[in-house]
Length: 247
Image (cartoon, rainbow, N blue to C red; front, side):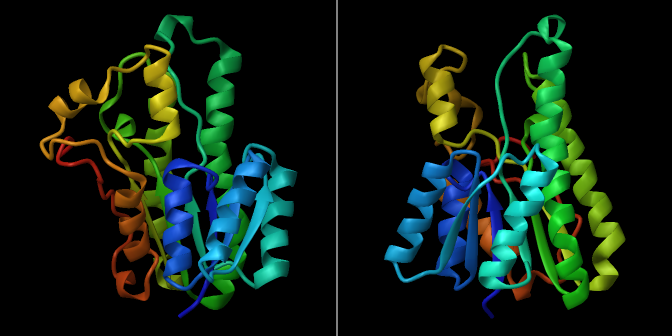
């Protein structure tokens, strides 16, 4: 059945791959990203393959922008049935060097932004007595990561929030699950490698039993299942897409 899916951070990386996959699954997709041009390009690709998409430029940390973005999706396609929250910021700062402004920005984007986007869609899901929520967290939120105290804390918060959503809304036909990837080959990863913040792929893969970096499509495939009718009895789960790196 075709639903309306809102995917944040959908202009690139995991979010883009997920938006494309959900469109292939037959859903109408609101492609949401801070970078409006990237959202337009992703939406155009969906439509060039026969899907239906709407590009929405939105800062997930801005409550009014999120409300307006979800309303635009609702007006274009109808009630929201699926939300995948992939929008996030990442980086490296030694714990004692993290400023309060930096800490608050990570919280605003990664944790509060996830909260705002889910909250914007929940009334539609509750009314329909059906909904699928998938948050993209991180292995860093499960086990920590060097020089990523701010990032790890926000992703751990996303995991805990998702579990709470599952408890609160299971009886209303709404599932909530989180995917914590490990190392995924995305533009953000390559930027961090170019800046010398992360090692090159041949070093990173030593920590991955599967012997390769993950791809956006790997995560999108799991999102596709979790957003389907077939996954109605799967909720509150932390489902790693990590090549066996985090067990």
